[in-house]
Image (cartoon, rainbow, N blue to C red; front, side, top):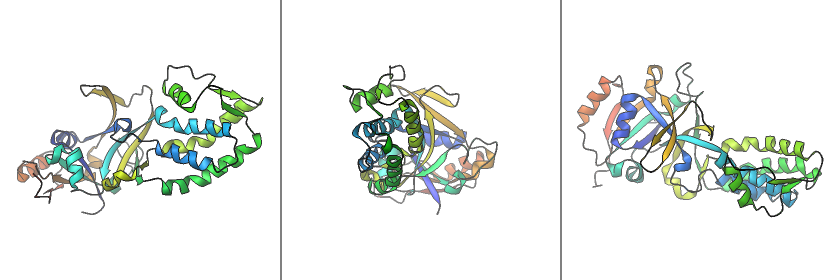
Amino acid sequence: MTGLLYHYCGTPTAFSILHGRTIRLSPLSAANDTLEGRLLGQAFSEVLRQTSLTEGVRAVAEVIVDGYPTSTEGFAFCLSEDGDLLSQWRAYAGDGTGIAIGFARDGFLTDFGPVTFGRQYFELLKVAYGTSDLLQELKPSAMNFGSEFVEFGEFVKLRPGTTKADALSSLSDRDGDVHGLFQCHRPDAPELLDRMLKALAPLHFRIYGTKPKAFYEEREWRLIRYQHRVASSNIKFLSDGQSIRPYVECLIADPAKDVVQEVVLGPKHKSDINWVRSFLGGIGLGHVHVTRSAIDSYR
């Protein structure tokens, strides 16, 4: 089928998604990429050095943008354009024993009104790989930022003795004392710093759109919701045996059920395909196409 995006998972998770018509958006900070959310900050720092801003102002701007991943969590439901990819079966679907659920891409972009699913509840984001394009995309923003603030000279900088690593560590601790991280050098510096924060704010919601080139094969898309790392009524928690982790839950109610279009049984999955079809028919998903992985040599 065309226009589908696939979520690979173990069989118990797939059963829960289908039977409960519910998906969970998980924190990207727990993903297997240690650079998750941080490539944009690195790229922005690189293009910012091409401006005429003073070193101190640049360092403050870099700390602000580099700190976005520690203040804002990206909750995501991860998908792939490929519904039968060996590396995905191995990594995310019980070493091939799991299931890939195919969702209609357009369904994620539909507004279902009062149903808590669809366009008004999360963003559908296609992941880019590597920073070459990102550097070009960020350059105009960096140049505009530089033009806006260069005339004010070194109006702010990190307090002497405070490194960027120190500042980021302080910003990541919500109970920590962040006062005094910055040193102002003009009477209007606090107002200028506030302008700086507002000027940089649009970058806040782009940090989870780029991954290293090594992940290119995944051809990933994300349903994503941004949340500050504070208590919120729509954030739930679970324990995985080693930690307490947050998640965001979305219900695929009847008006949105056609977003589920396909179920691919993994190359080592043991279910009888006709029973799977019966199961889906019994829960109101009889329209879903069921097939098996074409990777028949994987054992």
